Image 1: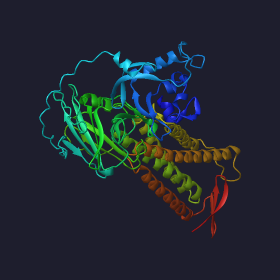
Image 2: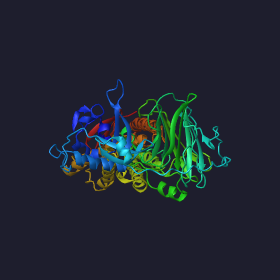
Image 3: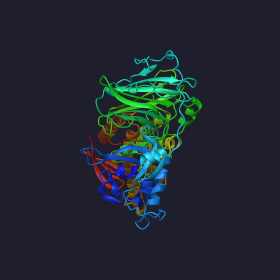
Image 4: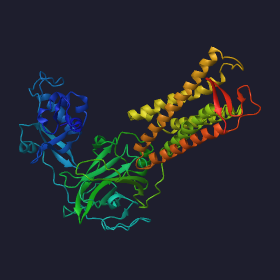
Length: 560
């Protein structure tokens, strides 16, 4: 069964049928003709458990198995039944099955052979060439002292450990770095956790994650930048699962974006030991030059293997889920930085990219939620103080536009325009709305400079009246569009940086509320400022009121 139909819950070619309940009704056409199905991962399904409506997912096929399944399905599928890419030799319409032989590694079947379902497993295995006996593993290396600055692990099989502050369920990570001349040994006790598989001639890190959870899943992620989930990968394991913990790419914030990854993960296991969940695994180490080169690439939505280096800083993510199935972790998450070779956890500061996002948001908040609205409110409530109102109006607008333009230049220089290649619809909308609001805002000072002359007495010209309407409407549209876009931007920031900036939305609404209170105070102050004396031809004072000639007419402004 393809991953796409599994994720959607029902068969794409038969939406009334639940995918895992009746996979035999899945057509060969959907499996090999439809790109969304054919290009997703393929899974081998197991029999329905007692009392369950659904078949279970056993393990995913590797790329070799995936391509072999496509070729075999096209051979046995029926062209007359709608399979356009089938060879025409077969008659099968739906319910494709196959016999697959391979070696299971971290939940992924490394395929050795694929045959029709009429071929038995024994026959298929017998047709494979016999493997030479593997040489016995070398003797284990002597234990080495922990690196300088390392917090010694409380588990004697590891060197270092980190227990981040306020980590959920007492999450703790232990690790040990093994250089290229050493190797890990196979444990005589298969239930023992830890570095238990030979890693050939490469440096690697053995890790053990622990938490005081009783059910659910545990995940240890590796991010391309600090606190950035997208573009990273994670080792995830489930208690009671029939497959070992495996490596997954983190391509989106939804469960559907957690996809199996053919990474170099070995010796993975998960078990409950004395009421503590223990998940162990090993990963190879890249050279510090390769790790540094790859880490400089901007983080995006395309997940992949994040290189780990003993010398460089490792951006660590961790999360714990309360259910036996992969589900949203909620607040049971966290992040930290560690140095695998030195063991010292470094400061959890923001990356340059994250600081650019924060600066962009602050600049746009100050501009569109305070200075530019302040300029409009001054024009509406302070015309009885001419020319002071005009100077303040122009000053606030100028300050707001400078801040907004600075924020725009910053985002174009430091971040990818319109969100980059893997932008979501929300990111594209944010970029488009921002450019539209910025364009309308920049038109306003030009519009003001080219305004028709205002007559001192009598009715205004038609051109002046039209200009007043256009100037006012354009200004309000720019402010309202930008304010809504600032709200959208903070929602995107909170989603993208929910680990590095967990309080982004709260801080934004505090700032926005302060801005609203400040603007309301400005209105009160502006209306209570005494009128200019002697009155100008735009304002005629009376003992109780001040007549203020507005751009759209005349209204009485009460004095305080």
